[in-house]
Image (cartoon, rainbow, N blue to C red; front, side):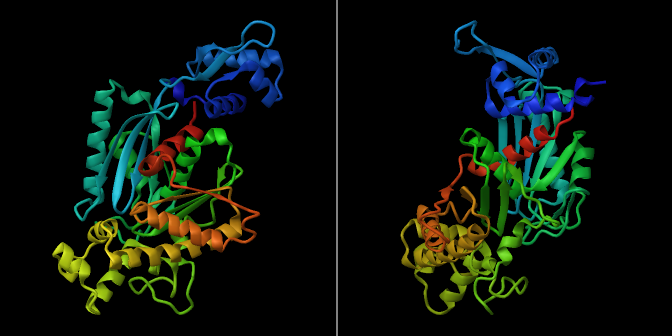
Length: 399
């Protein structure tokens, strides 16, 4: 039986997680954190080092006696795969136990990416990763998946994702299919949740406990963290933020969802719909400049026009950013996070979008400036979902 299949005692797991979080830790540091005797702590650290979970990483500064041994988790004890399944771009990453990325690949999702093609695609890249890094299957701890929702996490299902480019993704037993295709154990969660796990890991030394992540792209997705743990509701509806009503009796997106919902004002589809509607009213500067028809007026064209300074495109994106800021303020006033991380295609379209959304959100935040949350574009950005998916596996790994 492989050593990774035996259950690690809870005391070891707590020590392992603490050392992983801190990077390098001395025995005295751990004794000040855990209610364990010195002899018990010494025994546990020796056992974990012998098992390959930990390695000694030099010596710390002396406080009068011998310099203390520093411990860190062994980066090569095993490796973890992280997978992002999204509407526009998906990604696959291979990470060591310290969450150092060994290989990451991104690809654009289109109508050809049915589940069957998707599975073949990731299998091909996994085999390439293992060859490139000279790894064997038994060295893989597992795979974490951060997917567009809604999901049934317990059953490993992608239920009914909206605006997905390819067919076949409704009621899809993705965890089972990936396990059968790859041979690796799989964990599933919403991509917004794993993105937040990844971004929180990237700033772990700041010890932020209450965080909000909002992704604005093909749809709106959000995740919340309280006291360092992801907040899960009774349903995995990461896109629920898009159904927040910000204008009574306002429009709906594609004749579904709530009237006046945030997604009807802030999403790629909403922006394209608005641009095409205004073109029919005579606002044709973008069509003339980029030599496209109304039907060819895609999001990519709008972003280019926005970045090139076209007044009409600037107006469209600014209006969307204002609405987005209002939605953000509503969530902030309910949750009061320390840090808000914003991601997605709209956020990264132009710095003006981020700046406008943050300004409007703060102007509508209760008790501002007494309460001032920190806004960020994140450190991991497009790699946040796959990194967080790998962290999810490590957090739940059985040793």
